[in-house]
Length: 93
Image (tube, rainbow, N blue to C red; front, side, top):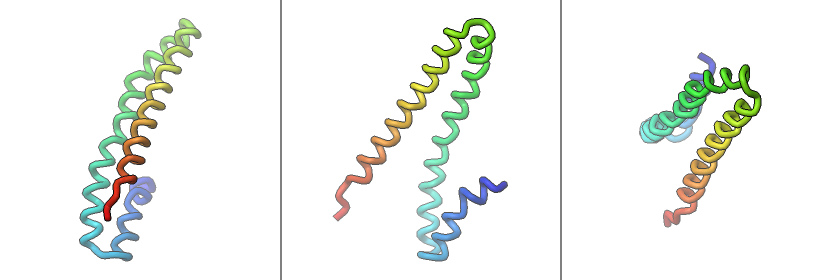
């Protein structure tokens, strides 16, 4: 419950600062972005049983799986950062 309040407090503050119309546009954009939050959870959750099974059997394989998972998330982080950097560099004048 606290997380939901935390994730929506920006919209409450925005309404007080600029009005309801801006909040509508902002909340639509936020909903599109929130979809992407689910992918790391789904990937890590589906990969978790494989990692745990490897930990009990072969520590080298275990560390290999962990490295692949970390590398995958790191790649995603770089793609996200590069996309946002390029977006914010656009000239809106």
